[in-house]
Length: 402
Image 1: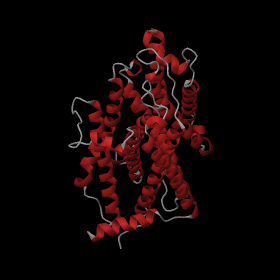
Image 2 (image 1 turned 90 degrees about the horizontal axis):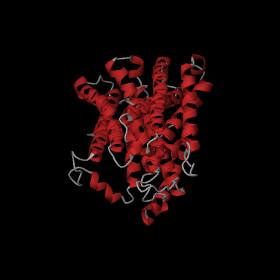
Image 3 (image 1 turned 60 degrees about the horizontal axis):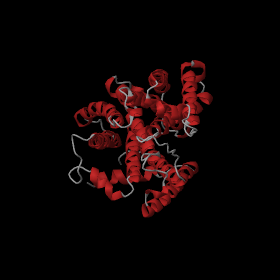
Image 4 (image 1 turned 60 degrees about the vertical axis):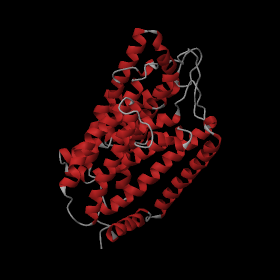
């Protein structure tokens, strides 16, 4: 027991040690987290009236972020498969960072669900053996199980591997490899079940499409490489003891070169189906892409997302631009934001407009929603930074058992 406590103690000390710029980063993220917590405390005392959610639009920025982050968590499989199945050494050296990203994303998902519920005690209703999950009839129950299961898998695998690295010992295959193979299929399931949660709602025709699950997965496999490239770029630039090899960047670029065009193609398929058939259910798509009866709130956002996607596709397909960090890094940010817009506000909100009774109620996040979302993103970035710092110190040999 003493050696485990010493491991955690030294890992925490390692996570909180660094340069002045590192402390400035941690401090900034901590302040943003506190601001978000302050706004949430007001929401907790007053209720969801501080949000712009209504009876007509009952899911907003919180659920949009939740949906997007499920894809970020699933994107970890893009490193897990090359590392453990194809045994690519360069990827295996940094795969733990991808698994840590998955852990962070799932924790953020749970936080967004928590703030969307209004009262934290309502969270008890979705905990197995405490609440009533209505399993297996309820798709929401499946979502609860797959998300928490994926979190446990991604806590165990990197946790065990890091501890063995810390001890300077080789990990035992039977202790983690079976869970790796399970996590690969589980990563697909978390986003598939989330898509089923939407497409199974018959009263929301905008979501009633068979390709919603493939769209979710391919958008995750597009935004995931963009985020991982940004993370590994920062590791190479600011962490002197471990360098991510160029072959890892090339692998992620190749995935993005396939995923971004397919994501645009599937979006085009949806647009064609909606506008060419021109049924009564096209109203939600009209509201999103062209505006409906003088309501144009989301139109600039979705077209910005499409332009971002086209630009990102062009850069990744151009070897000249994709090998230029001055172009690639801003493009990864643009591509990541574009996927967030398309999969967040561009998917959730139009599903509620117009309502089943035909009323049009536009929605945009309130000040409270904005700062609570910002606080959760800051907390996620803070948690990810701390975990990565400790993991990098162990992987690079800076932190070893005495």
